[in-house]
Amino acid sequence: MFPFIDTAPRAARPIVVIGLIATNVMVYLWMWSLPPSALNHVLAQYALIPVRFTDPSLARHMGIAPPNWWPLVTDMFMHGGWLHLISNMWFLWIFGPAMEARFGRLGFIVLYFAGGVVASVVHLVTHLTSSEPVLGASGAIAAVIAAYAVTYPAARVITIIPLGFIPLFIPVPAVIFALLWFGLQVLQGTSELASPEMAGGVAWWAHIGGFAFGALFAAIANSLGTGVKTKTTTWSHARGRRVPDVKPRRSFRGHNPRE
Image (spheres, one colour):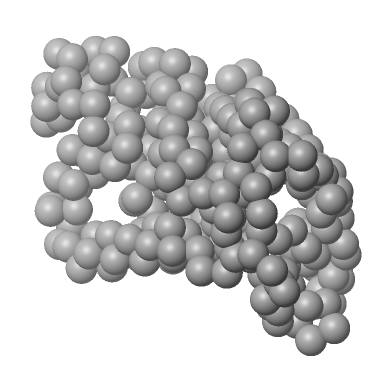
């Protein structure tokens, strides 16, 4: 399942989302330009490596200087390849602008970064003895997906499902899309704990932690009934492009976010 477009109101100018995408791309290009020795040094210092926190002596032996808490944040701006980067940034582009409109720029920044940190902490707790570097924005994006589903559960996510060489475009309610995505993470994460050698290099539990945080964040924020006056747009199903709303969004107090 790959999201293509959605029907929730999106920020007309998603400055934070665009800034995050641009930053991730620039960091990846910078890492890609480094020679192998320099790249290994960057990974050792800025990727999330659990033994840095759980076994300082081993970390020093590996050339990792503990303690250093910055990787809980910096790891979410690093990616292991073009496909990893493009996939994460596409999901952020689909689900991020609606959350930037709903919670405001500052609120969205809190959701994204706090979700990413929580995701890193959950991975750390579930992989205490791991010396493998973990990197990627997927934990933070998992928080965004969950917040989207909680805020707009009935919104349609037009999803591409490949049938051989034929792509099927199927509208899926956001809550169903998110639950299917989350269920896959739980299934794979549970399998990983039972058979660590089958992990496949994916931080499943980071996704789970980020998703849980995003759902809680949205539930609390929506219950407070606060919102911002943000001009939004929606995707036009007829023409495949976004069309500005007639009026800016008003305060969400009294507004039903499930529309």
